[in-house]
Amino acid sequence: MKRLKICHILYGLGVGGIETLAVKLCNRMDSTRFDHLIVSLTRVDELEPELEPGAARVVYFDKGPGTDVQIYPRIARLMLRERPDVVHTRNWATFLEGVVPSLAARVPGRLHSFDGMNAGELGPERKRRVVVQRLLLRYVDKVVARSDAMRDAMCSLLHLDPANVDLIADGIDLDRFDRPVDRVAVRGRFGLSADDIVVGIVARLDPVKDHGTLLEAMAVAVAKEPRLKLLVVGGGPLAGDLADRAAALPCSSHIVFAGQQLDVPALYRAMDIYAQPSLYEGVSGAILEAMAARLPVVTTPVGGTVDIVADGVTGLLVPVKNPAALGDALVRVASDPALGGRLGAAGRRLVETRYSLEQVVNQYARAYEEAAGPRAPWA
Image (tube, rainbow, N blue to C red; front, side, top):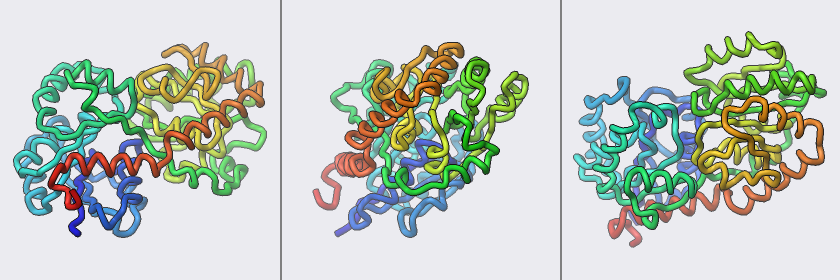
């Protein structure tokens, strides 16, 4: 039986939620039914070692900044050689680079997923992007959103019928968060002690994640609970700016920047509280991972976060851009271990019942089959 070939278009294979989910899909889908090709628009390759042998082939391009139309013919020629059955684009960052060449190469099926937003989606380029997506989404066979909130927002913005947009969130490999970890040793790598109360965030250093508010909140929190420390995991365009802002705070010695890390499950296990004051989210894979690690979550009620964090049940919600409220919430959890335990246990149960990796892999398998339509080899 001929396998269904899926061509994943990614901006790069850097450490991020979109890229990590793509790697998990390639690793876990039935290899007797699916053949995966990853097209990376840039030569960022940190996650390539995470691909299991034979899970996917990777082809790298050298995309220029902004809209680089010169790359379109090269991608189209690759598609003509490879003959994928479905091209999967994600967010605006890969939309044009996947849809336009796939039309030129007459690829049978197209799937586009709305996985979240970055600063570009919130900025001045938004109007042009909306017009282009409205024009080209009519040629996309399957559309996926990570949450009810994102589906509603995108349908309103792009004039889509909600009945034609599937809901598929991130999928969490729970086994990775149950393996034994030497908590003291992991903390020691970053100068953290066993007595510290560690607040963590795992996210790209991008404006949409609003790390700045978290830094200011730590100044509020540390003044009330000196044992609190902040572990910032991730890299990105704001790395230098955030380091400078942290250095200027009175609690600067309580803030540790870990940079990009691959062994993320071990880092969650070294934390006591997870905090992420985002300006927007689809459904945050990092928040789901923190829940899988049984951490109490403190975050903002934006986008799809409200689908997974019920205030006082699976986490605590604080207003956007409110360092005082965030700092007080961190102190509240730090001073009440029973509350933290209840929130963490409830979050874990939610992930087990609704966001397991197996469920998401099966959902995407069906979506790929439907995007391929009658061309699917087993249809």
